[in-house]
Length: 231
Image (cartoon, rainbow, N blue to C red; front, side, top):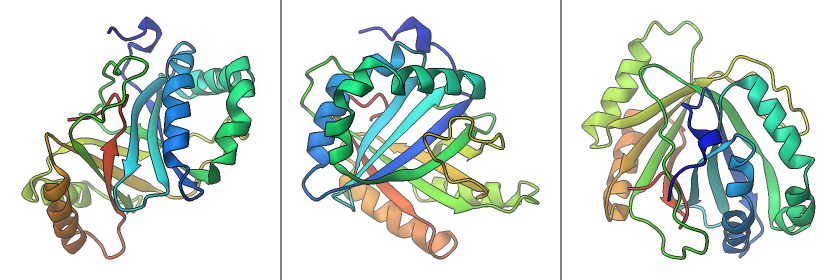
């Protein structure tokens, strides 16, 4: 399967979206999302970079969405959320959710980029291998690079070399219909563990929690069947 040509770009703006769902509704949303919301978003110039189950919170669905830039984001979101696909399925999607406003608007820090790989075909049911580790760190504006070197070193020493580092996108949210967390300077570090990594991910999560500032969220994310990002 080849990627949609409209999505062949290195995302310059990335949303990290974490949804809290009603008990027992995660698989309902994933089935709907993977059937109706992958190709239809990508046809409008967005990238569905990865879709995940949070291994430690059974009612959390996490996904990454990429855009060529802030202007492209506003245009694509207006087209999708004002279009027929979302209108046809929004009631079912919204019924599964308690909260969908935990959203960070981010940009990749050089030299890292987040790859956009082809998804499994429509109807795929088997979850692919791998676990993504994601840590969200509050970040001082004055950092001279020392903190970032420490954090990436902690990941590497734990056996989870960073795949990408994302920083808060400073531009304002120009699609206010979808709220994002503003005024929170953060770095999000992502690592991809390949193969059957559930047990290794527990160890790495434990080690990172010991090394990173107290209270730093460290997520273990299992790819859904059609996730672009997987091991």
